[in-house]
Length: 146
Image (cartoon, rainbow, N blue to C red; front, top):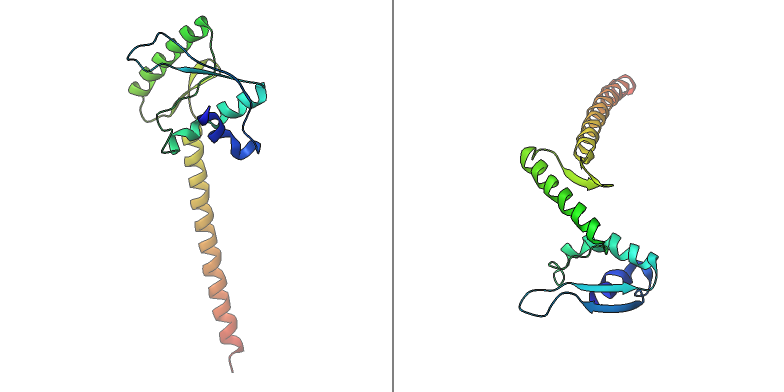
């Protein structure tokens, strides 16, 4: 409950209302997951959407939040994660992600490289303009200099 409150208070203005909290699995020495049920789907979406920010928090770096899945969904997810690991090992230069039920190479790196190229091109173009302006300014200054 503390994680949900801490994580969500910023954008929501108030902590989402927690309906139910229960520890899953049999008690023992293992770390057991906790199911947190929120009152609204919107609050759940917000918490899930912000869950990646937990890794930046010193207190909650080892806390992971995932949506509730059926047995079938968990089995499908396990297969996808295995496939994801294989792809990351075979093609480490690409950024692989699970999107909409399949493993895909993220275009983010390609987009970033394309953006870097455009920025470099713009910088070269601005430098060329700057040189032309300075050259023209020197000529103008020399012509009008008494």
